[in-house]
Length: 90
Picture 1 (tube, rainbow, N blue to C red):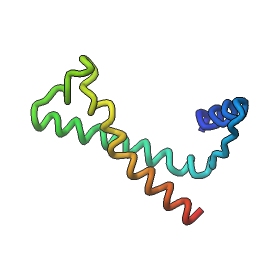
Picture 2 (cartoon, rainbow, N blue to C red):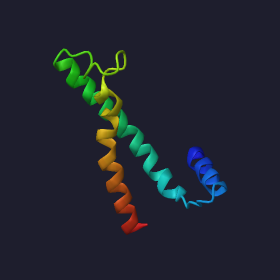
Picture 3 (cartoon, one colour):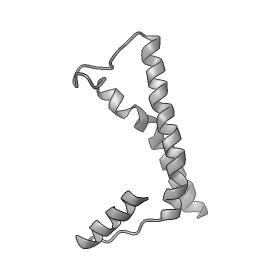
Picture 4 (cartoon, helix red, strand yellow):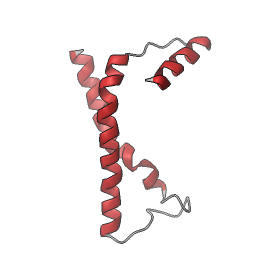
């Protein structure tokens, strides 16, 4: 919420005013946090099952590109569905 508030203020100063629905953000944030952790843990289980340390070697020490995006793969459809649902209901 604080990041959204700061982003809204900065965008206003830059001449691109944004309207952020803080109620929607407050409702989506806890759900998104839990599901992103679920995505990260799921990919960790897959890696353990196949005895893989990293999903790639493009970024040594970071677990590969897929490790950077494993949480996003789970959370993106959920946030999209929540936003579409909230557009219809709220």
